[in-house]
Amino acid sequence: MGFIKDAKAAQAGADAQKAYTAGHYIFAARLNWPATHHAMSGEVADWSQQIEAIERAGWALAEWAVGQDKQGRPEAYPVFKRRREQAARAPQ
Image 1 (spheres, helix red, strand yellow):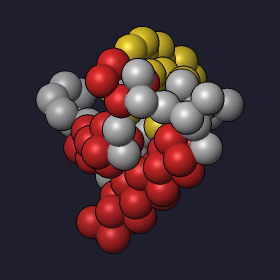
Image 2: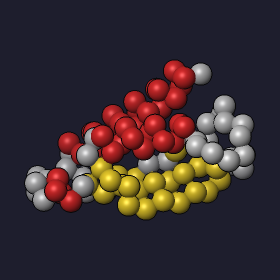
Image 3: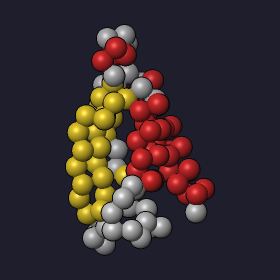
Image 4: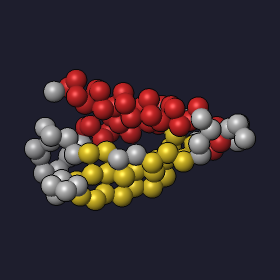
């Protein structure tokens, strides 16, 4: 199932890069609960990998919220901002 986790991270990174290239200052994402996560505590590796992919595109995590989807599964709603040094150079 690693290919699903990799694909989700690749898509998050591509979306983040597209927003960054377009000059956006804020990037909001929705990260769904991994189907293979059975543990009650510990790292949610899918989310970690997606956050890393987004931050590699030039974003920094600013805010974080968690809710539930229709089936009651957790969903994360991270909001990212351009890194300060990069925001100063952002196209206007």
